Length: 588
Image (cartoon, rainbow, N blue to C red; front, side, top):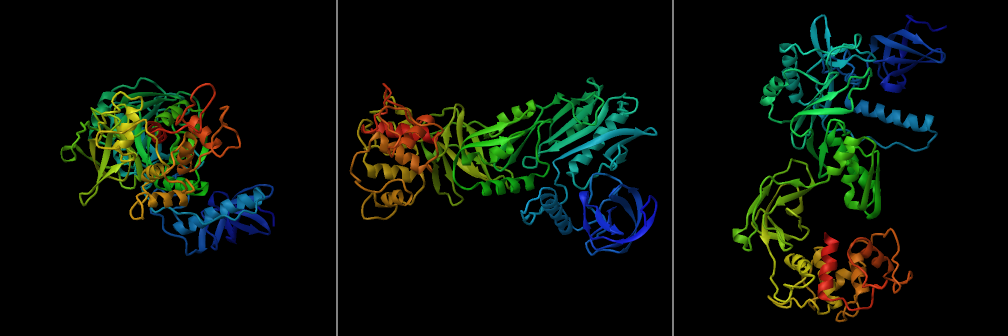
């Protein structure tokens, strides 16, 4: 029987095809059925026939699948925003997995087996972005979503996937449009102003952006809109995006900021993310974090030299894995996204300035409150009197304290990484050694001694020009890496065992003085032996020497320099001042 439009047939759905349509066969010919589920028996109407396939819609479900549910949205399926609201979520995941598997095997010719999908924990209210087309029909304002495969607007302001704040903001904006008779764009006459209402929310911080997409640059009475929006305290930016082109693209290339700084800030995988209207950002933040962490897991634990983030957008993927690489390069063509990427990864700044004191009992205490699930996050605390010896001290719930060795002084304060919320004190822990006051390595000595990595010979003497033994260096590096140094028959035995276990040293000759080659080599090994991009070119560092890679790495990263004349002088004794300098540079 030849299939033709408007014919009715009874079919059994065998599986799923493109876009989640059910797949049936009539006399061996494939028929894609809108809204049908696998295993169902349906009466269908043929809508369209092509040479090899046909398309149909369900007239009646004769034998429903156990996976079919009553849609929880009154706008489904008229609204084109959702496809699967009539299917249990578990079946939706199976459908999507099959789609990927079919594309790989049938189209790509691959024998890769697709693993199970990591489903979302929250399937409602998860979207951090929504673009609502605006129109006018029979004199009535419409704001919502396009019906599938059309530009007919279904008035829908209460989307179950969007945050509840979006509905309230749409209501305020709609009242402003109607009260002040703001013109709405008409696609047929190419006239009018407002085309879309574009909303974004940063779930970690709660910040919201409102962007009016307009064909006209000058909108009247925007002050009244801003005044009406004051009831929504989380709105941090309001903008107009100019799009006067005859195009299906939602956004134009230029924005005018009416309120705020034109962006909002979220935290993703512990990285502060600056989001502007034109920058790409995953719409499901929770799933994006799971995705990026899984990608990092597959990338492996070994630190690499260079990480490339292609089509990087605001840089979120690369920045989430930046701790795995010595250098991260993002490549992007959208200029606003590039600017966002440059600013992303910066520390979250605490909105208060403190003054460090030398006494822990009088030191300022800072409570860092981060959103739930923020994970490890870089934070900067402004400090009015910051010095290389300024440290952050973590205050545990039981009142005990611990110096955060990786708290790094900056130009304006001190930067540290916290895992969730934390309470810290800011202390000037400089030792004030009398023999380093005018020394070239004073700042480095203050930095490492304040963090308890290198001790003085006494409370007032550091002895910067003295040599350091191998046992002392094992201990310094073990302290830097938070090794347990308790126990042992000698003061250095635990550090010696740690150095041997980590491949930092063979543990021999504990009392021998360290030379420059040994210092950079042990430091390099303690940091995971990151591969240098280029080889060292010193005349006294041969390519086959055990320390060639370490010297190359140290010079490339500003940890160490040559001594002049094209020489590194690897066998020269490494002084306590040089050790402090090498260590401080590697940590910064």
